[in-house]
Length: 80
Image (cartoon, rainbow, N blue to C red):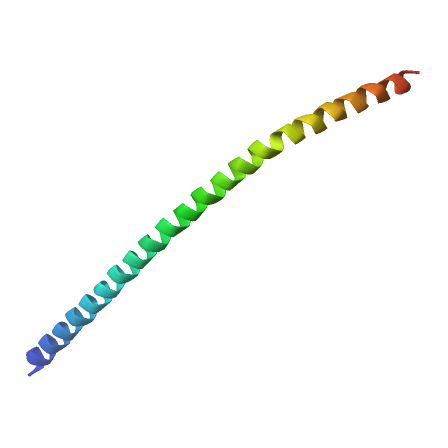
């Protein structure tokens, strides 16, 4: 009888492991799908950042040039 109960216990353990493995595989599939969405969103965000940088670059260049001119003019007064 002890062998029979151990066998039943072993079968139950295998069934539980099988169910847990199936659950793990389902969760892995969900995670893989979500990762694809995250990658897509990341690519879209990077595209938006690139567009924004492209649009802002002329303004940033003018600001940098103006800052250089201001620094140059201020250096004339500091030298005196």
